[in-house]
Image 1 (spheres, rainbow, N blue to C red):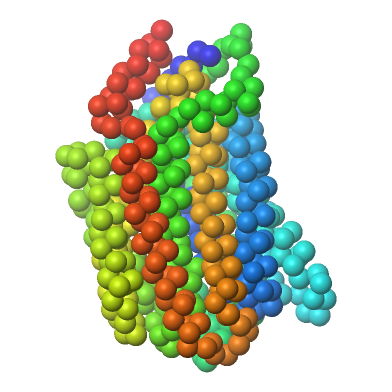
Image 2 (cartoon, rainbow, N blue to C red):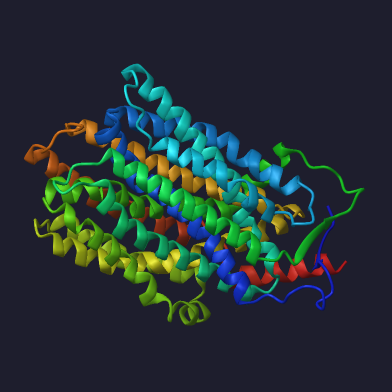
Length: 465
């Protein structure tokens, strides 16, 4: 398949890439992160303590819903790739129309219907949670693919990745500071009304962010496919994806590293409530974890220029590994020690997050190098699925582990051994995850600076034909 990249219109008719695009693109992921991380951080505690579902049932729900994602995500990626460009662009229309369904499913997921029969709670949870996942996919995959058509310039694309990670940091600050104040009452118990308020509020904010992203960004680059180009089946596309070693390495690395990052988000509420006995510090702990993003921001570009994206992302995990090794082997009942070590670990996490989307862009180029096709939506769908798998793994680990250690849903206090086991889970699992993620990125992901230069030179040669 012959592919050529070109500017959509003459420069005199198209607004040059600039700050408006960066801010607009940032707002798109602000909406995504606000909803996705709210689900990831608070759905488990909502189901167990507010909705009345057992931790084991929640673990099964998380696992089963990912089976459908394994079908839905690649299918959505192919739909996005094959959909013809409209007057609003190829990817931007999804931001315009799919935010409302996503907001509705967010609210329904955290809604406790009065007098609902017990035997209807679990089916309701399945329908709303899977519905949320499908709606999220329909907006997240086009959003992730949008960066490839905002600009061709690699430096400008890197700036989009930076702004995207700032969006995640800002959304996390809101989640960590505001959410606990609304979903927990003065005694530390969960508030059903609070979950409804937060879900409605975040759904509205996310939809405003999506509309701003749609309005502020401009698709400048199109991918033209010749009419006589041979059609490629989904099976052939998936076969090529399986040969993309860089994609496999990045997915495996993300499974480890993101699990290590998300486990504290999912279980911190239990840790501070049942182990430390200080649920009021949950907001501070979350806020401190975000500081790392702003610490590494001035240094990321310089380090990447000297050592390369792959090496910086890989070796930043050492900071996290050291922090969690201390937490595992030198436990303390002092919550401030935990918060301090998480601040240090957050610096390593921030480096990884700053670079992950730039690595995804490199994987997209490598896929074109392997297949001769530009399949941004499909590649992004494959990586997006891996992130959803992480969310499912975290939910399953959290749910099954809580059940295994004897956590009593809805109980005002937990047994001391249960609280101690929560601390073990929230420290040991991240340590293993960071080690696994670093090893996979180092030895499986194969796009060094030298390889990337060779890939880009070959792509430029093909496109010039």
